[in-house]
Amino acid sequence: MKLILFGPPGAGKGTQAKILIEKLNIVQISTGDMLRDEVKSKTPLGKLASSIMDKGDLIPDEIIMSMIEKRITKSDCKNGFILDGFPRTLNQAVELDVILKSLNLKIDKVIEINVNEDLLINRIVKRASESKTTRDDDNSEILKNRIIVYNKDTLPVLDYYKSLNKLNTVDGTQDIDKVSKDILKVLNWL
Ligand code: ADP
Image (tube, rainbow, N blue to C red; front, side):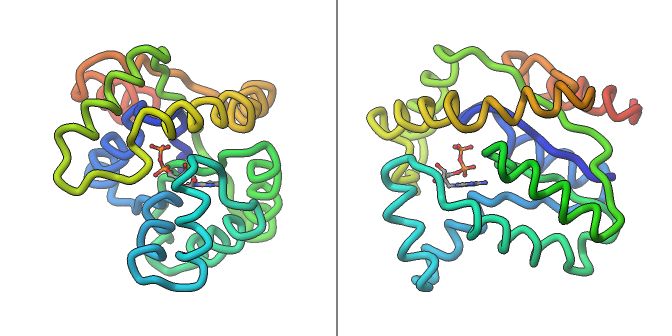
């Protein structure tokens, strides 16, 4: 099973991905987590990434695409994967299709976790106040920019999958359990 989990910052993509990988025995591919690992390891990519992530802007597509291409060709992806936080620009979505085609693979489902903007801001502010290891980008100023960037650069990805009739939407304002159930229903797993 190969899935894309789509949604704005704070929609709960990471939370749902962790539940789904257990149930479906597949791996989570989070470009945000991969980038944070690079930052932690202080690699050259990490140094570049942190200056961009700290502003809530997007990492250039070429960097993201080469990370993804390397990752999805690893052997642990054989049984399937969930893309979480990727694709985030129309160009990433189109290039992903090219890579998948060359590997003779295809995405089974694209799932949008739909949450309205007010709730998102509340959730992220709460995540920032509760977390001991607060993410540098979980503060209100940067958050505002992440939402602007989402609306400008990432929403076109939604229209892309909609136009290809690949989009399935679940209501992300429900309890975590209910959201997972709705996703599993979309996957015909329940
Ligand atoms: P969230 O979904 O909460 O916004 P992520 O962990 O997915 O958080 O991403 C954090 C940051 O990492 C983004 O604001 C961006 O700077 C960078 N990033 C993650 N994935 C991508 C991507 N696919 N393309 C460009 N930048 C990305």
